[in-house]
Image (cartoon, rainbow, N blue to C red; front, side, top):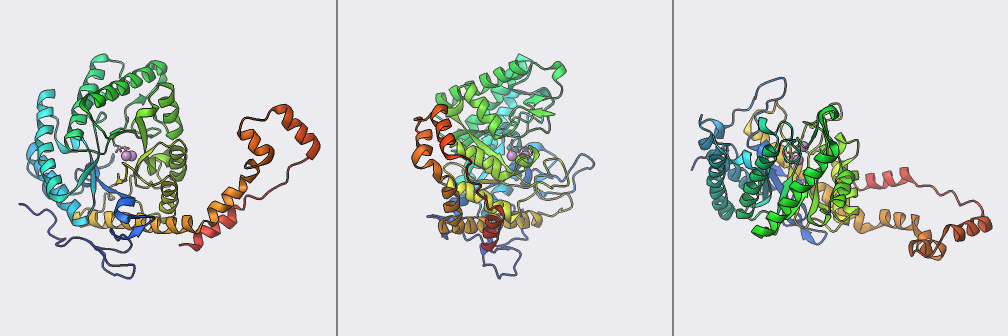
Length: 437
Ligand code: XLS
Ligand code: NI
Ligand code: NI
């Protein structure tokens, strides 16, 4: 078998924070127990096939800069075969338990729809064999309904019924592939499910169509007995000028309106949160407040650039805050941390893929350790609990039990006068977090 990463001869190991070896984990110690589970189980790291294996370094101003040894056959199916072997070699050398893909990442589109399905089936069979040999699992599969020109005006929201049908047929096959590979989840990200201009768009109709599309997916899930979870991934825009799945709150509202809430959870991506004008922590919090956190696309954006730069997560603060939300919601069930991230265009070598993943895994491992300590020490939580304590007894408790009214509360105000001004102690709490780092 070909060896695509000869520069890394051994599996990457944990060596501790003092190690000077760039090809070792400083914090990610897979079997260490943190918060009642191993680090490996708490974090459920996943490789994003499209960036890590298929990324070329191309951007809108310039061509690809990476020369990946698995993409040099001048034959898309041969490349696809080499790529799946390269993927599993990389995954095994890093000890990453999961991977994610779009149908068109793992197998090329053929001349006809039938040929595309055949290509997919062929590569899925190899992936299945390699999953068995390496113990790697599929975190989620998805269909790429945004790259091909036919989806210019959307898939599930396309004004043309024939294109809508293509989107459904493609998702059907991507769901079959995900089922065959024992996927934990199936994902929908609608990069073209939005509009470029409202001048040519019937907004309400496109919402109704999207709901029909998702309901048919639910029907098909039941039909084939797919037990994994369905997830939607919010993003405000890019490539569309406006994407309907704008942010967590918008998606949850949409799911409620169309009776889809029981069937979906959210896949939160850090860089999408910031594009929507939120923090990563905010989007996770909105999802968990509804019990709807499914999984995470772990990356970061560049604050100087206003687009989805999909950088590897190295920001410790963000990781701590994210892990606090995730742990407090009970941790991942079917989800994990998928590195929807790419090395910079100038990071041209395959070894850069190792540095990028090692750094990202260490960032979240460290975030997990610190978040777990903050939670188990309980200082922050007891401050928050105390802050709401007037609702735990007396007239406050009556309000929440539905036993109060405007009349009753007016009487209480007339008898008691102004409420006390209570500090939110923001700076004190910020200092508290820093003390744990
Ligand atoms: C793009 C999205 C995409 C989804 C999967 O911005 O993050 O990569 O995660 O379709
Ligand atoms: Ni993503
Ligand atoms: Ni993204």
